[in-house]
Image (cartoon, rainbow, N blue to C red; front, side, top):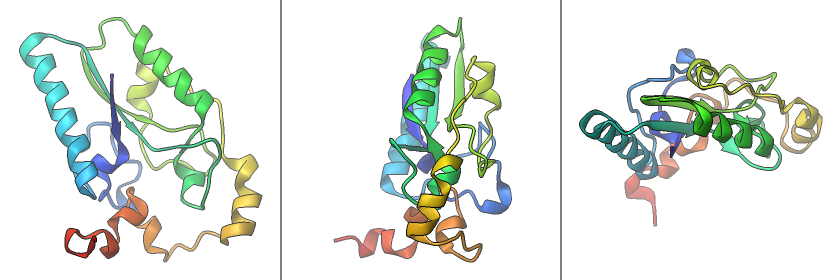
Length: 165
């Protein structure tokens, strides 16, 4: 198993949701580039040496959703455990790319087809935290540029390489 990230495909636009399991790399940062490179290396080891390799593009794995975006991208700790267990128990998975996200009411940003094919069935939902998050952060604004791409704030100009200090 390789802990990849949604940032390997962070520049996937909201118009393309749900982002497919095998979406071509569209990294949003150097971190995303490193995750895309890790996926490519896992593919090489599978094709050249026959190793099983599951690349999990993990979304927002935190104890609780922290902002409006994470109400859609949250992966609960319990669901993370279920996902990892499904990957480890899958017989002969070959090479796979799957997303790690919970069953969020506000979800639908990424495909869960490959994760489910591996035996993962998410149970948790961010919705019980929604009122608290919205009271603290405000309601979702469709014009918010953080919601324009899968990578969220990491797609904003503040994260351009020339602007980082």
